[in-house]
Image (spheres, rainbow over the protein chains, first blue to last red):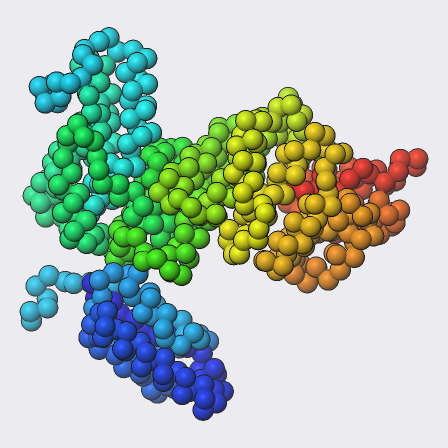
Length: 119
Length: 446
C-alpha cells in the first residue's frame, strides 16, 4: 500500500531548538530513510518552507482569490511529507516512530484510482 | 446441505434440546476459529461475519432434522465458504469494490487449504483476529465492540445494549471499524515478539477490560441484562488467555473481572436500588468465581509486576481483600492501603491517590487520610468524589463546618441523582444533634 505521511510541527519548537537538537532531528530523518530503504520503498519526501511562505488559493464567485498564509490556522503547521510504499499500517507506524518525537504525523493511505495512474 | 457429504452424523431426529445444545456448543467452540479462517482466506471481515452467521442459521435449520454432523466445524466452514463465494460473485456482477485486508500469501494459502475433514481444523488464526480487532488505530470503544462481535460472536443487539446505544448506531460503528481496518492497511498478523508485541498485548488487554466495564458503566438504573453482558467480557478474556498464554496481564485481568463480577447479585437491592459494597449481602457473592480468581492471583501475588500487568495485579489484589473479608468490618484496610500505595507509585494517578486516602483513613483514622488529599484538587478539579471523601473524613474527624462545605462542593460537581441523594443525606445528618459522624468513607469506594 502507498501511504502519504503529513508531518506537522509547532514552529516555535523548531525556532527555539539549539544546534544539537537540530542535529538530532537530522539524524532521526536519516534513520527513517535507512529503515524505509530496508523495509519499504520511499516514493518521495520533501521538507516545506515555513508557513509564512504559503499562499492559499480559493475560488469566490467563480474567480480565484489568493490569501496569505496556510489554509488552516493552528499551532501546528505542515512542515513536510513522505510518500512511502509499505506492506501495511503496522510497518508504517513503526517506521514513522523513528521520526522526531515532537512531530504529529498523519498517516493516510493513498487512493489508487483505476485508470488514472496511466495518464 | 446434502447429507451425503456428512454421513457420519448422529442421524435424524426431532428438533430438540440435544440439537440446540450441539448448536450452542458449536457456536461457542468454533465461531472465532472459523471466522479467523474465513478472514484469512477471503480478506473481508464483513463477508466472513455474514457468511458464518448464515452458516449457523442454516445449521439451526438442518441439524434438528438431519442430525448433527460428525464434524460440525467442517460442516459450518463448508457452508460459510459457499455463502461467501456467492456474495463475491454477486459483488463482481455489481462491480463494487471493497478494500481487502492485508493478509500475507502463506496465511491465505494455508487458510484456503484447510480441509473440511474429520481430523478437525488445524490452523488457529484467532490470534491474528484478536490483534486486528484490538488494533491501536481504532477507538477503544470500537475495538471493544468489534472484539466482542468477531472474536466471540456476541450479537450486535447485545453489544449495543452493553454500550447503551441504539442497535443501528452500534451496527454502523462496527461497519465503520471493519472498513477502516481494511482501508488503512491494518494487517491480519501477529506482531513480532519484542516491545512492539508487548505493547499490543497491553492494548488487547485494555480493550477486553473496556468490554467488561461497559456492563457496569452508570446507565439509567440497574440493568440486569447489561450486567450479564459484562460476562461476555470475561468470556473474551478467557479466549485471549487461550491464544496468548503466559501473559500475567491477562491472568490478573481475568482475576479482577471475576472478583468484580462475583458481586453482581448483591449489587442491587430488592427495591432496585444499588447496594454499596459494605452493605452487600456477602452470601450472595459467587464464591466459586472468587475462588477461581484467588487461584489465578496466588502465583502472581508474590512478586512485583511492571506496567499494565502490575496495575491489574494490584487492582485484583485490592478486590481480593474485599472478597475474602467475611464481613465489611473484617476488611484488612492496611493491606488495601499498601496495595494502593504501590499502585500510585506505578501509575502516578490522582484517582489512585484518592482511593488510597480512603483506605488509609479506614486503617489509620481520618487525619491520615485527609493528609493524603492535600493538593489533589489541582489534579481532579471536576471530581465530586474528592470533596465527597473529604466531607466524609472531616465529619469523622468532628469538623462539621468543614464537612458541610465539602459536601456542598461535592453537590455542585455531582450530576448523578442517586449519588446526589446520598450526599444530601450525609450533609443533612450533620445537622442532627446526637448523631455522630457517619460511619464510613468506604461508601464512596467505586
